[in-house]
Image (cartoon, rainbow, N blue to C red; front, side, top):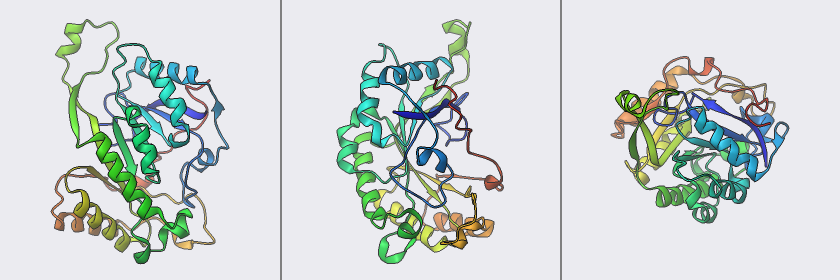
Length: 288
């Protein structure tokens, strides 16, 4: 396996980035080739260190020792057999939920085959159906994205079920069990599916179609996260519209649309999300 970073990560949704953060393991390579990828340097395998199954299991334990609320596997698809072996080798009493952080472009049969590796799915749903939009082909070289992502999301819900929350208290070095229990608990997502959708520049109508589809198909069985953090990484000669940020007014219109669908409980981002950096340094922190 090639891994580019393994460290606490604070920039995930509520319930996942709990306490000091999620224990994120960033795997190199990705099934998609999105033009606008913010993690392109690892998605194409340019960064990272090759490690063994045994080292990965130790990384999981090290993240737990740092107070991580969960183990967050970022683009893990191509390493599931290795991850399964690492998880099976963990010591008795290892109690962190495992999160699969994915683009949504997954084979349903693979999701079902490795059901025991995942407790929470944090999955993208990027694009509307092909007849209504050309974005999947133009931006991610995956004309079949919508159909594949629908089947994958069905499998994720089948495997993880509806959201299940638990009280979580961070480990306090040097504190007694009694003192730890006296700390106010935080809500941690322990089972379920969170579906992310990122608004792209000039694609408000596409986003409306995506969210209307998700709402009609899944209702409240999954959690929704609607993001406004698109950050252009460079100029795009083949898709110049991606060289600009999204309009805040479009994001507000999208949120109004969700309210009109009857969606009252979803995650959303406050103004200026695109101005902050959600991209950690892929410098082999926690790997070597």
